[in-house]
Image: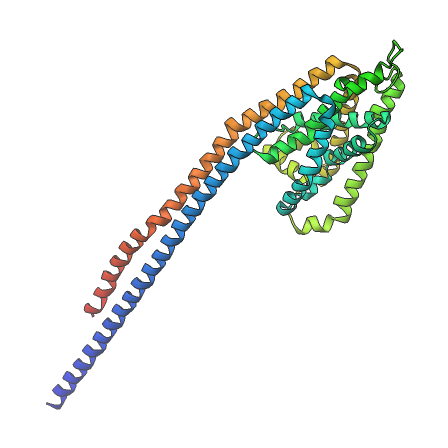
Length: 381
C-alpha cells in the first residue's frame, strides 16, 4: 500500500512537472509570437517608410531634372542670342560663368571626394583664360597661348573623353562648358569682335597691321606651340609634385578620393580598351608614367593642330561645328541609352523593397505552424 501511494505521488509529481514544462513551452511560444509580431510590425513600418522616402526622392529628382533642363535650355538660348547680337560680350559671360560655377563645383567635389579633379589641366588653363581676359585683354602673346590651350587640348578632350551635352545634368553641363566655352570665346575675339576688326583695319591704312593678325610663321609657332608646351610642362610638374608626392599618403589611405588617373584607369580596365592596353606597355607598375606620356603626346598633337585653326577662319568655323555636333551626339546617346538603364535600376530597387512589406504575412504563417508543432511536443511525453 505504501508502495502504491509512493507510486501515485511520483505520478502526480511527474504530471505536475509535465504540465509545468508544457506551460513554460506555451509561454515561450507566446513570447516568440509577440516578439515576432513586433519585429514584423517594425519591419513593415520601416519598409513603408523606405518606400515613402524613395518616392519622395524620386519626385524631388524629377523636379530637379525638369528645372535643370529648363534653365539649361534657356541659358543656351540666351547665350546664342548674345553670341549673335553682341559677340564682344561673350568673354564677360565666360568670366561670369567661371567665377560662379567653378567655386560651386569645388564645394560639391570636396563633398564627393573628387576635389583633386580641380588640379587637372583644364582648370589650370581656364585660370589662365580668366587672368588674360580680365587683366591683359590686349596682350597678343598671352592671347595666342590661351588660344592654343582652348582650341588644342581642351577642345579635343571633348571628343576623346566623350563629353555629353545634357541640359538636365548640371555636372555634365559644367564639364562641357569648361572645355567648350573657352574655344568659343577665343573664336569670337579672333574673328567676330568689332574691336578686333577696328584694330586690324585702322583708319587710313589699307592693310591689317596689328593684333591679332600675324604674318611671321616662326613667331606664330613660338607662341601657339612652343610657349604653350612649356606652360603645359610646368603644370605637369606641379601636378606630379602635389598629387604623387605631397598628397601621396592621403590618396593611399583613402581609396575613395578620386583623381583623373584613378577614374580613367578604372574605366579603361573595366572596358579593357586601347588606353588600358597602351598604359600597360611599360608594365603594371609604370601605368601612371605611361599615362603621363600618353597625355603629353595628346597635348603636343592637339597644340600643333591649333596652329592651322588659328590661321584659317573656315577651318575654325568647321571645328566649332564639329565640337558642338560631337557633344550633342554624345548627349543624345546618354539620354537614349544611359538614362533608361538608370530608370530600370531604380525600378528593380523598388521591386526589392516590396517583399519586405509582404514578409510579415509569411512570417506569421511560419510562426503559427511552429507553435502548433511546439505545443504538441509536451502532450507526447
